Image (cartoon, rainbow, N blue to C red; front, side, top):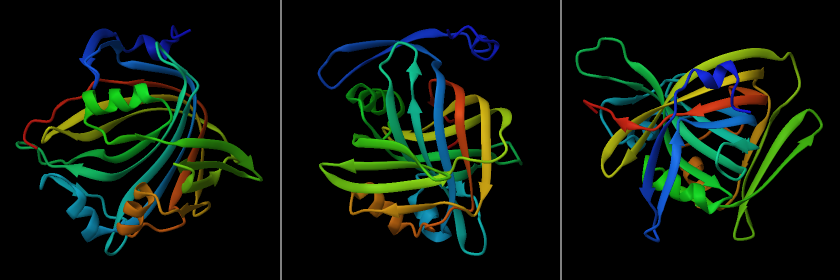
Length: 249
């Protein structure tokens, strides 16, 4: 367990933080997640509204058509995280190009706006390490015909329902992405790497929004209700690195 060639690429080091109750929490990073399942929808939203939602003029929204920007909604089932209880999560973020001083080529990334999880421990981790706006919710993951569905509710009220294709040709992949967050007024960057299998689809699936603030913010950004494309991860290993301050942002 956690001894595959993928995980061996990432030497781990201890880290800690003090939670809201003044208790020291200790972990090792990168965090390892074995055998995770995930689904990600790539939607369009208003380009002008996306630009206003970003915390730095050096973070630019990625265009997705005339007057549109690329918005990402992802739902994950972390079935076997190292040193933590299993938990589930849904997030949304804006794809960004990061303009750094001295570089002519923008760096791609994903600015994380909001997350919902179902374990309090991970609300604390997100808040104190990344500055992520995490909150608690209730999750249901299930298959519905050819779709994988994630239903999220809070306080007994539906927040949103994400339905994305789960069938099709499965391909192996390995990739690393940059996650961008804002903590105490500072822009942070961290690396998230994945290895496993993926199934991609175009213009299939949908998202249904409720009255929860998470969904209301998506609606305010002008999100399309059908994704431009999507991917389903039936089985993936993930390494999540600690963030560091992004100089020049």
